[in-house]
Image 1 (cartoon, rainbow, N blue to C red):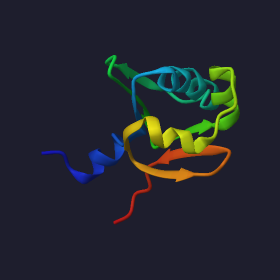
Image 2 (image 1 turned 180 degrees about the vertical axis):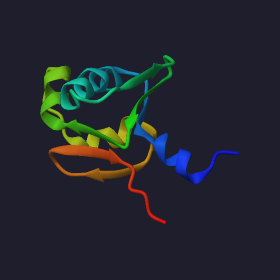
Image 3 (image 1 turned 90 degrees about the vertical axis):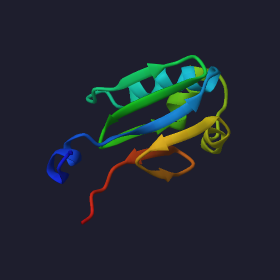
Length: 102
């Protein structure tokens, strides 16, 4: 059994995308938006899990750069199969995060 103290150390957050061009763009964009983070990519073909510890940011500007077209953050909802953590969405970014509360 994992104790609570150790569980907080293993809080990965991030999106789980259905496969496709948005998922592939997100892989590239998330690296640009989180340069100091160790990011884990688990590409299973049908879906892509992108994760990091405690917080992960994905910006509209980086998604547009990676896709080579205009992108609205609400498009993420179409491609997002699931996620880990909590989510904050603005027109300019999506933030996946873990906020511990007892």
